[in-house]
Length: 176
Image (cartoon, rainbow, N blue to C red; front, side):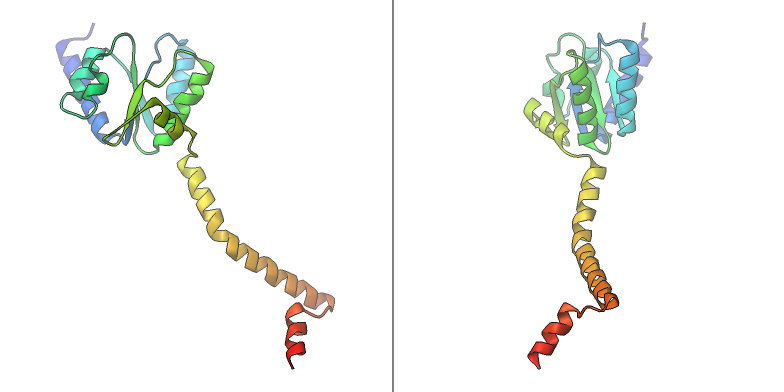
């Protein structure tokens, strides 16, 4: 049984997490086997997130005066909050993947910054590539023209070494 001081400390920690999080997702982990629940929490933690399961009244007290207050006002039954401190799509993706294996896990709402998200928007967020994948795609896009130039220059070098007249030399000779 939690003492009043424990509850107050928990509410303060929840407030801190809510203020520091880039995104918060309302879901459920109660009823999932403990080993699977630990695995889901580990995956969320690796995505720089956190999952909290506690009483709905404590969630409500922690969100008083915030934009999230309306989302958590009339909760009934077991719930969990998942916080994304850096990469919101990665945390959403972890929960969505877990939801494929367990029917109990589903999105019930969420916030990205101060903007409330619908369940459809959360699913779309979960389908986005992770931050690292997006950076990799961007870098590949930046490197594509450089790589193409390097291939052309290498092909010209191979032609010269093979003794075949280079395309550029042939065009330069036809202008004279």
